[in-house]
Image (tube, rainbow, N blue to C red; front, side):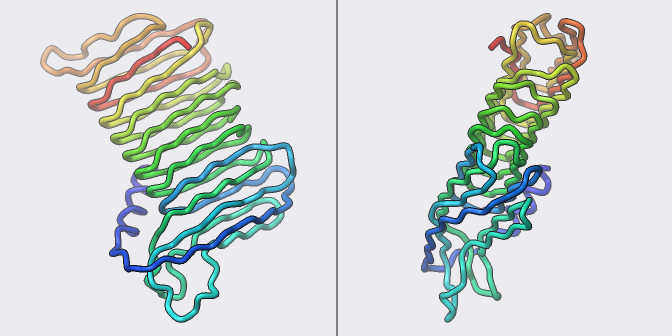
Length: 268
């Protein structure tokens, strides 16, 4: 995941010409169940909100800096739908113009069980009330998710990741290079959770009655565990530590890996 994010950042690291264009958007699209709302964005802020309507509403302001050429009629945002899925893309470079980035602020309402798939570079993304799958990738932006998502995939290079799930999560994959993670989870009986970090810290908060197997390791970071035994060193000569233990009947599986960051297993 993060390799793809880094490729996006390299492709977008271009000189920014003067000038800007702004467009206000307020569009509602009726959708059938089982779809995905997809978003591609370089810079700005986006807030996804779950609701009980069978429609997606995109509202806010799109701003893109750079010279647009002679045609000022081009739309800054491209919204398309087949009646199930909705794709949202900001038009940074249309018809070869030097049209790069800007401050975009969007509020996107989605049906509760609609999946959310967002890719950003410097945009902060927040999700509230989601009950479907949530997949978000960011380079510098922070990611915050609250609600009842059952399948979650969050990745950031420099931004922080904050997840508070009020319903059992079946699968979760979390990656960070320098950003910190703070994850508050309820685990389904067969949940599979993986957490990976290079320099960022990982905090995982679980309830006392959690039933799971844990495999946690760091190279030079520390491991703190409120749920069970303490970590042990794996080598006389290296700072690496490992922690493997089970709670309850097992069933769920939690894997955590960090190079320099700290990993904490805490009670909610």
